[in-house]
Length: 348
Ligand code: SF4
Image 1 (cartoon, protein in one colour):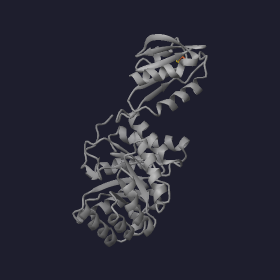
Image 2 (cartoon, rainbow, N blue to C red):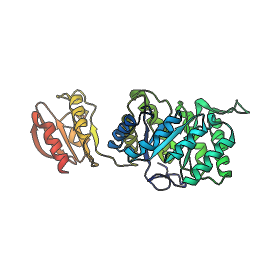
Image 3 (cartoon, helix red, strand yellow):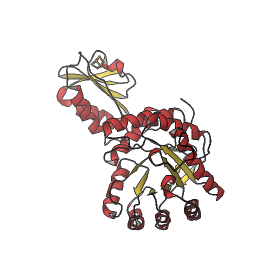
Image 4 (spheres, rainbow, N blue to C red):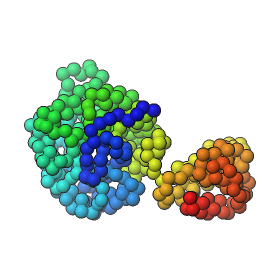
């Protein structure tokens, strides 16, 4: 695994992105931003699963103004997502947003971007240049590969911001196509000193979207690229946050709550391990500590196969072995599987 790419950290509200700061997990609300109460409630749900930054769509002036009241009800920094109308970015800044995301492909003239940069600079609010493969600005060379077009579009906006002495910049280059996304990020990672927000856009429903995102985000992180992540899913945004942490945990980049180890089961299994693992996963959702918990499908191989688990059960017919770090502790009855395991987790 490559060491993390070095970059200039930026500050979004009280959260640092880039530098040596932990790689953050963010999401985006799917409520109507003008509906302040619904948006606050959804952000609170995201806060409950430790989302660290939240983005809200700002489609009109009413939504931009709503940011002021939304901010009063939430604790994590809020990023305003602006398409087309740069005046909405100015209004969102006025309303107290902590970060801005602009899509250069649909903001248009440099003068408008400059106006936003000036207002953001005065407030020390970072701007994410969010290039999306589906809405690239017009190019003189349409034959360029899409990844290159994405990089060129971002570099043009970055140069524009830099020409105004604005360097509170974060960049994303998202495509639906995973190799295109990886190529674009790998290219720009060597060209700019700014933090990178990584993700696969319109990745899909949880079943396919988590896989696409994991392949794309995971590959980039393994290459040392990425300072904040968003897993885009057609689902409640809570699922994005959960998936984001799972990706970071699987690369040992963050610790976040328990890790469940469960075997795929095989012809030796004598219990309904699918149901049991699902029940344990539900129970573990309320636990904060980083602990590795195993649910294994047979007594013979289970403790050995999950040797590095902090605590686990290896289940046979009507009974299970409770084990810690591969060592057998005692035998428990089927009716006590979950309660005994969870008691050990709590005690850990
Ligand atoms: S732990 Fe036992 S049941 Fe599970 S996959 Fe391994 S051998 Fe099969």
